[in-house]
Length: 57
Image 1 (cartoon, one colour):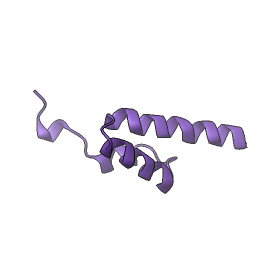
Image 2 (tube, rainbow, N blue to C red):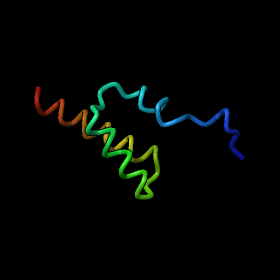
Image 3 (cartoon, helix red, strand yellow):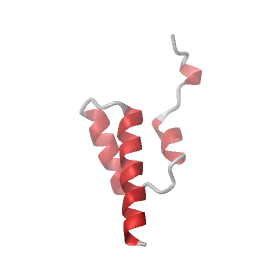
């Protein structure tokens, strides 16, 4: 069983990903609200942000 002190909040997780813009954060929140796993939703958005950055450079 997970202890509450060991769990990260959404804000703590998002701080690990400075490349995510506000739109990516909103998309992740919407996916989480729709029932997606928080870690997967955030990681997907980070991957898209990195791919977009690589493509644009």
